[in-house]
Length: 337
Image (cartoon, rainbow, N blue to C red; front, side, top):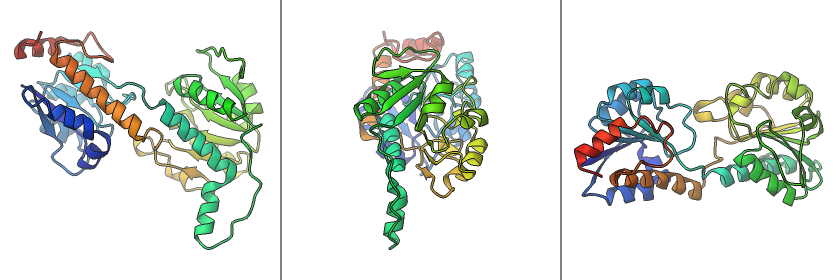
């Protein structure tokens, strides 16, 4: 029988993985599902202990795929992360131990793009600030809002989220600028420009580039100095793209008008407290992908992968497909294929 360990704490199991869990437990003749025994997220050592004897680990995002896990779980053949981001999974260590790493379909694109739009509208119309004032019994001041229609949005990174968001902003009547050295925009309604032009002409700046060594601190002091002093800065991508000290300094000095962010360098990629606590900053705790549609789609991708394994088929979305020798051995042991 195939043993699967789910690292989700009980709350997150119910929120993110309920239908997928029910689908896995319905495979009772073929699968045994082992749950997180605690009411909280587990440490790497606790995952190793709880998942002992399991051939598959389905790992919640709060549980890292550390080297030690791949070295000490001797029965592990497949590590499934039901989300796209696997930046905290030591794929090299998994490969060295012939363990297959799988991730999810990118179902988060509409949810994250809509979060960016929500934050843009919040800043443009002072929604959060006015709500706090009014709830406190004070009549908030009535600053003139910034209309998205007719304003210019600058999107840094024309990937899945950037291109999706760009189309929505065009539909709202915005002038949309994009910059990306690795992608070409074919839409006549969107202007592909240099980073310098985008920073100089945008009313809203949204970094949506891939987070890697090349884009680390892409939004640094020099980049910020090129922006308009009344710019609205919105980040729903990764905190790694931003030199947060430079951004805070510019905001305190009035060289960035407003900031909204759903990500940062805090725990679990949440906004950093030193920025989130600044007066006027709108900060949400990494809610971009938290929609029912996204959660269910990503969770269901893990079920799809387990079903493929039970059929003796290479599961989809393998990050290191050549590291499948343990899986092949498991198929032989279970008489699959």
